[in-house]
Length: 372
Ligand code: PMP
Image (cartoon, rainbow, N blue to C red; front, top):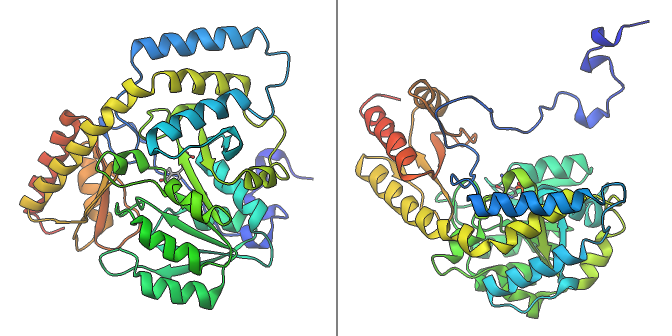
């Protein structure tokens, strides 16, 4: 007999493919300047906080009941927002919502991946794609990007034909490198991919602010294979609210019903997200400010002698460091938390408020002269 406190992970009859793995997660450290998880640095304005509180008070009166399992009102609001944002006419049947886009991606893998199936992604990209694939026992197939981190479309088309993945991930703008893919290039990938193509647009609003269209524009022609995943965690300043969504053919939304947990989105999450959507214009006012700050940070890093990857998102990948891990510590010791994403010689910084960016740039300039 073993006391619960004495049981170790290795003692458990864990699935063989999970043994030795580490959970995903950036360090949550109490540092003055936190620029490591690509959040919007601006907290919700008082009117939005009041609106969420009122909506939750109202919803609380019904907390003894399960929520609307299909989240219809929320999906209608999301459809209206996304139609306005992208110029593509979308209805409630095209939209699905979940607890963050991570859950959206997981549901897609549960539906279209699984044992014996493959998911291909162009690496480096969002590290949860392989982890969610592993969790659903979908084999993840990494396909390389060019040295400048762009996708070589010719090569990608050949790889897709050759490997015939059941799912293809395209992250646009790509995390952690920042570039977005042009719709005509994406269309070629979707044409070549035999299975579903999931375009992960977690950072799309930042790219749309600089004239780069959403992949939703391709739904009219490529709707049988295309799914566009989005989130309220980034531009929408709603990371704590946990609300992700997708746009796709209504049949895709129907398919996801086969795997989603019943009542997965709480009454409070649905009410809060709807309140946040009512304030979309005010919240998204920060997107242009952040895009301008991104360009300023990129230019100043460049002037300080760093190699900067062009970004359409709210973060910038920069280097080169002899030892990225040591450089990351150097920033941390000077009060600035950024992200070591595991790409040799490079680190990623999230764009913060102008003051936070100044603090980061000050440290970056100091460190540029040291041999890191
Ligand atoms: N996709 C990408 C590319 C991301 O960077 C993130 C957040 N780091 C997500 C999806 C998931 O975000 P959330 O679950 O908060 O919507």
